[in-house]
Image (tube, rainbow, N blue to C red; front, side):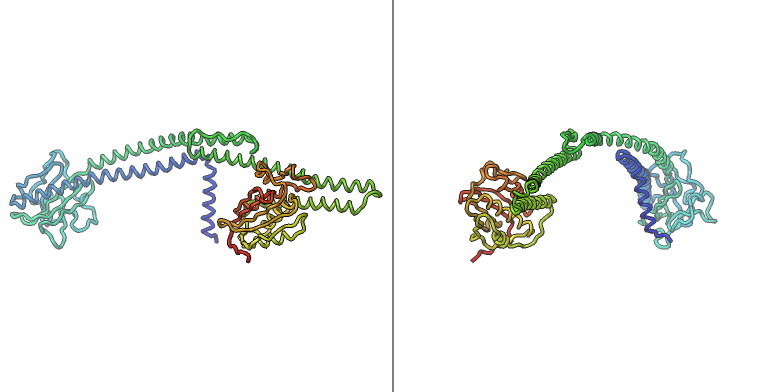
Length: 500
């Protein structure tokens, strides 16, 4: 047995595939406009015909009620039924006794004499009409009786009973029970022809049957032209995008002159292309710089090994191994920094782990360096972030300061304006104010203070800034009170405890 739900899903999938095959967006939008306009205009035309017919018929029935009320007023004043003066033209008025016989001998036609009388009683009396409705004349009805009214079992002939309205074929029949002082209970009946109304509505229907398709065709053509005009900038942008070989090209999408959604889209896409071009440029620079930096220790290692092999008797193996080890260590540090930068460029949020920043500083300060690290101003303070990344930040800061310090490095932590501050001071030559922003760029080394042997690859401070930004912090360089450089890192703080 087949699953009905699976069959329905399969049917929907087929329908979606067929819709996608219809064609371009312009075609689909035009078809949607045509379908919606056809449905809306058809429904509106039907409602218009019904409203017009109902309004005119209601006006005719209201006029019949008004005339019957006026006739009732004459009867109440004692006017005999044979002398009742008709009120308005265009309808038949008659008085019937409860048994269906007319009081007067003929229909009263106060209007046009050429107006045709009501049709045969069998047409005026369809089966199933409820009580107080129209029925065919009974067997004992006199000749000429058109119909009689079946009165309710209670309230028959009660003055003031409201008019009863019904519709028989092309005729509107309004009945109102009255009491004549001379003839007793009678029913005043006004029968109005609706042929003109029906013919008018039929004409309106024919007009709408021709006008609605014509209007739908006109709207479809207008929609096709307007949608094509609106989508013209999209075609231009598509052609421009097809001509752009890569993001580094100077060509950009044509921006429409109008300040609408398409203009915003073009500007946004151009901005995206600019960012991609900038990212591609930085990637090429990064690869070029990384290749150069990686080639240097590899070349130095190869040179030392080749010299040792060329002069085995005049070369000490221990010295060669120490040189190779230094280059391998440098190569290892460079690869570690490159991997750390690659991970940070993935823009992954740091885990929200509570970390004792002072413990990271004290643990890394205990490592052996060329100059001592003073940690007496380190106080207990907590931050949130990734322990490994923050440890890398502290290590790079201390290594950078120790590399350029003359005799010592001072480290302090503090709480300022709700942020944790990590301050590194050294007594080295410092960093010129013009170079303080440039040193945070990748592979930047200041020739005045760094050499190939003593300096790094120029990635340490770039990593420091990237890690600080990843944790919602900042880093800046100032002049140290000890004469060298001061690196001030600020990170969001969770708690602070002043050491006693």
